[in-house]
Amino acid sequence: PESLDRLLRQHEGLVRMIVAHQQLCGLPFEEALQAGRIGLWRAILGYDPQRGTRFSTYAYPAIIRQVWDAVRRECVTVINWGQGRTPG
Image 1 (cartoon, helix red, strand yellow):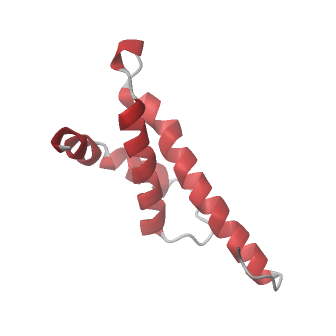
Image 2 (cartoon, rainbow, N blue to C red; image 1 turned 135 degrees about the horizontal axis):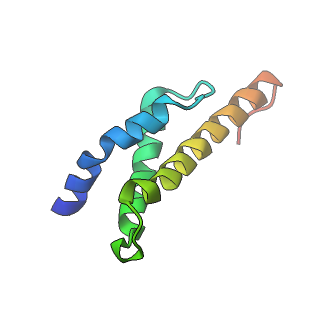
Image 3 (cartoon, rainbow, N blue to C red; image 1 turned 90 degrees about the vertical axis):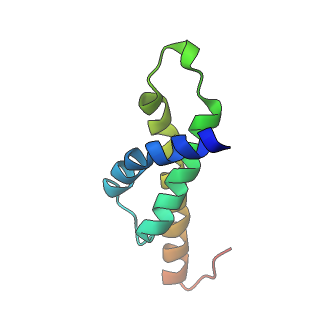
């Protein structure tokens, strides 16, 4: 757990950089950051240094996928509310 926490803190800047460059469709920045951190956590758990890929290269798609999923959920909610439908 200590090394996991260290890796999460060490790569927080990557998460912030990715989130800062996304259109968030009304999703609060902190929620997008949290989604990105989940992607980072998944990348840390799945990373295999034996494959010869830099961690940031491996983590980028995992982080952005989580952020886009959160943005997509937010946009669908906004669109549904805008059309008079309840989310869910």
